[in-house]
Image 1 (cartoon, rainbow over the protein chains, first blue to last red):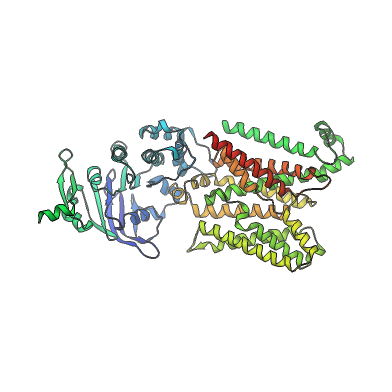
Image 2 (tube, one colour):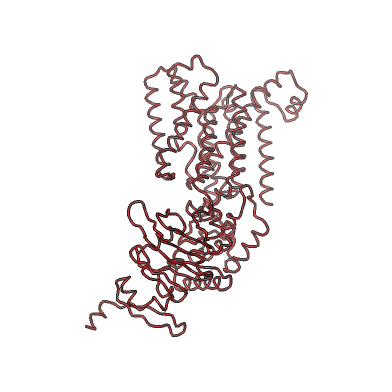
Length: 267
Length: 330
């Protein structure tokens, strides 16, 4: 389905200072989309706009043609699940944390989980390979494990759209790949639409099927990795000299950085 | 299942405490004596002592203990700070100031039983709402600045009270200090009933917010991501807890420490899930105050100690012991 998630003429920002303006893009149902761009380009501001931590100044965000600012908090949480960079869940077990994903599905006075809730939590913990750490406290888990548990929690919300804010930023390559493989699997097997902010251009190009590139508070360009991850775009947006080649196995573009010394020696 | 067992144990403990505390006093009773007096002792002296003095006092103690401890749980939950207690927000300072004003301006000499409690209640509620409205910026309540404003207002009101005390007669100072120290010796049955009903109503209402409170353990932003309307939840919870504290202070004066220590211990020992935390804190808070009060009125009998003295010493000590033990285990 086209235009499953659509951002139109969207502007938002902080009361004094930085804002993003005129952001327009739409992603298909079942797509694995990424938002890339340098620091200060507005990725996180856009994320906060989508999660509505920042109020929209202009424009709209549509999910299935419904403006999400017309949804109640609960409705939104049933449709869009959010995974942030850091989880500050102190003395809560991983299992209890995942079960909290059922909160948006509950009525006021219904504060006991049903069998269904437990079954869902177990299902997604098994899928994310976190079931074995269910009795551990969140603060005892490593950053990568926390990310996986957080994704399991997001899945128990049974959302239509999964939003992730740099899910790999604090992880080593083992865990980066583990987390992204999992998200890719969820995208394939559950048909879950994914939109994530991602810093690493190579990971973005390898995993995402659609990229939105931000620059100076608006989107610079968008398209498939093959269309937009090239040295012209990257040099224009990141102001850095790079070489791009193709990954021989996946045929996705790969970005190489070049040191100043090497550049000087070429002259 | 585990939770039901804990709950049953707590209810049994509460019942034992209540009955035990009724047997203690100038005239000691055994359990069987107590029961037989209650059953068929109508008209006797012991019956009158029980129904007019001990039972109301135990009810008040339980209600105030439950209310303060519940308020502590709520405030720590919405501020995500385990060191916040009902009095951190200037509630006691405001109440004391209200009472001091009434005493100094002489109205209390014509004292109606309701005037001082009302002054205390008004003082605390006014303070709390000042803190509340000063913390709202651009339509959003800023939790962290609320805490600071609360602490500042409590300094201001205690300074104002010092000022009032320094310019008043020693007799007035005595009645102010006496009121502030807190006591469960409240002769007015209507006030006791009010406190009891209010604290139970507070408990029931708070249960409507179990999920928001649970979600708030992750922080405001994450709670919103889970579909919680944090703005309204925090506002309503704040109002509930303020009223609970206001009423407690009005009826029993300032009894410190319960709201800080009890919730903390329950989190450590029982659970930090609010569906358990709320009721457990309420019951244990009640038990705690009733026991402390029993101690306060017997330890230097026939005189009485202010119950706040006992709650401070006992609560603090138990707390340190529990904390040391649990950190050893880990």
